[in-house]
Length: 333
Ligand code: ISE
Image (cartoon, rainbow, N blue to C red; front, side, top):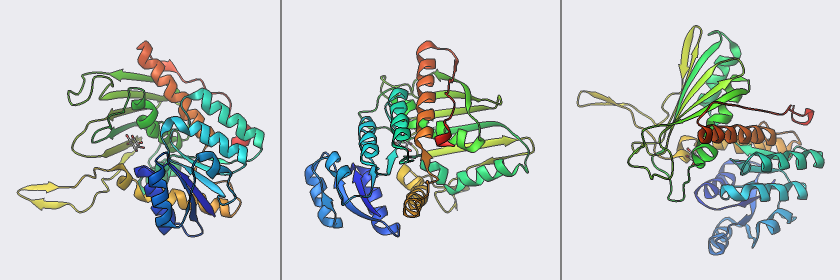
């Protein structure tokens, strides 16, 4: 499987190295980044072709499938170009800038008549989240009654804007909870509160999101852009007969000076390294076997976009808002 990668920032370079070293049956044959010097240098280093536009890469016979790892606002155009070229694409989240663009993508994919689009909601492949899902599906602890989660970043880059609190960060939880719990959202509510003095005024930090599922189950999610101490992802499910929570994956606990010290990771690419490895391997294996990948679909990206937009509406109206989803087409079942 010949892979082209669009976008060579930190995440793009991670995927480049991943496909090069950890994905049997795949190799990187094409690269494109807005920084042409970087593209040429990495192409030389990895034995790939440097393209001078994303469109040229997508349409090249050297490329069978595409990974879109460029900035969020470019995802829509590149995914649409892949659909038009009839090439499978794994697009990092979010799928598009808003629900209208995501709706265009699902329309175009259905018109193409083939499931081409995957969305990089990699947490679905994280072994610890998979454990949680097993507890939910097995039912041995009874029904899930409530969930608590936290998404804490060390800090955000200077270009970070208020909508990104939801569209770029909480979007992971928006996807993971409907996947974990196997049901859709009924309503959502956004609460800002006491502002962290370490964060710029232009974005709310921290925020509390209340996501209510169709069954009435509530998910309380803290989203924190400036936790300073580490990249900390927490998730606890309260069952009728027990509770299960994600473990800290950072490594060995140290006992010293009258205390236990458990390290916390600071980098999300490391926190979810295994998830990304498993996800990209699953994607390539499915494509090589002409099967639909188990990765999140364009439909999942669309539902996430609708939910994110509803949360922003809740922020702007300061009120709980219903999540209005169209019926899932048979194409995505
Ligand atoms: C980033 O794009 C991610 O995907 C990370 O998982 C998230 O924690 C971070 O806040 C985002 O900016």
